[in-house]
Image (cartoon, rainbow, N blue to C red; front, side):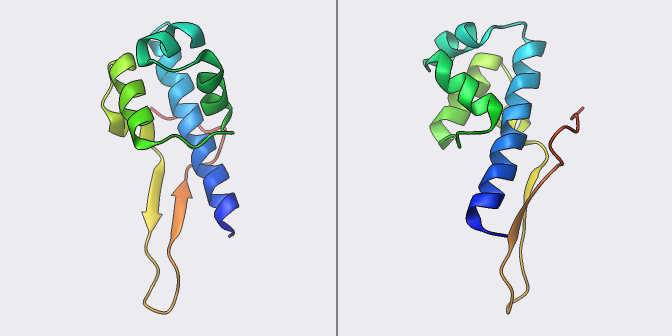
Length: 99
């Protein structure tokens, strides 16, 4: 798996988590952007999984959505490799719904 592939899996999973949390909060992308001090287009890019957020962006979004930052990372993990093998990121399948 190339670095771009795992980034795509992670960004899609993160985007789905943002979308779910935003809908639960009954916010538009523009409203969420305002609350998180981010542009509406960035919210759209994050939700579509075409942008990988920085840690400060995760914290801003979590605060704006009134959820713990960990909720936005649900379904993502790192699986360490053995000493002779590399580790890899794991993300739930895109399209699965978190609880």
